[in-house]
Image 1: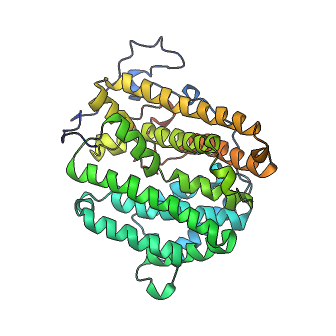
Image 2 (image 1 turned 90 degrees about the vertical axis):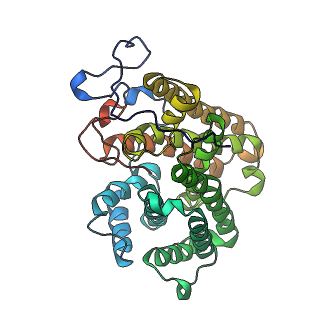
Image 3 (image 1 turned 135 degrees about the vertical axis):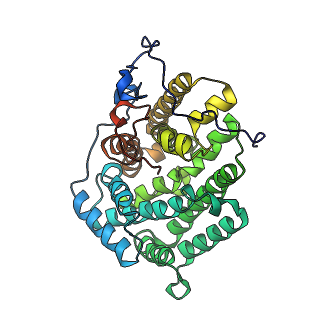
Length: 364
């Protein structure tokens, strides 16, 4: 579904026009503050913000676990610390043990994603990347410390044991199916695009990014955080499928906005919604940012609409489903708050005013 290889649209840091300040919610920043033309208030939110009261304890235990397996180094320590705080925002009601399981999965994503997000040469060997994915999916589903050969192998097997204890075999199979979609339908395509400097069209990219976000697996983890189970019958309801997809995409596309400086302007990675809008839809940078904001907000509204539909279905009108949907809304809001309050996405070239700071940014 990729178009012909294209060069990225900018060889220098672009500056947004300040002449379109009439656009709703958008405040052009003074020239000295960089690109920041939108703010936190540009985004719709699904629920009030909340922080997990156990956040400090969860983060500390997650750090110790990563250190135990030798995954935290002087080179990645600061970036890891910035990412390790996400669970406190996105699973605000989990207790410490269940919060640690969620943190371990999130941190697995950090170590696996950054292995590819930061290393173009590794990404050029697509077959090798796919073999690595198959290896980790096998460890995640089946475990086996005797087969673990690397620090990330060790973390993966430990995660298998933890998730199986909380979720059981059937839940773990469903979770691993979501993880497989993330890797094969998302990451593998993104890696190929970057390695070949090729561009997906907009429709293809929107689907790719839904999976590349890993959000379907993160939504599955709401069941672990809350200690609930969602039946196959309810999971397969069209309205529930729409809710999951809306949650996944609003988080994914918002992440593309905050990570635009690192991904496109620095790494020259074509896997970014703003870049795709510029290259495929021929928008200028300012128009692409506004379009991306609208897409993010529409996905949030789709989540709320699906929630209302589910309330009208007797099998879905239960405390468990209510908690599950609340977990999705916390992911939508928590991702915004975590992204804007932390240092992971700070950049003097950020489109979002709250992030226009002199700091290296990254991507979830």
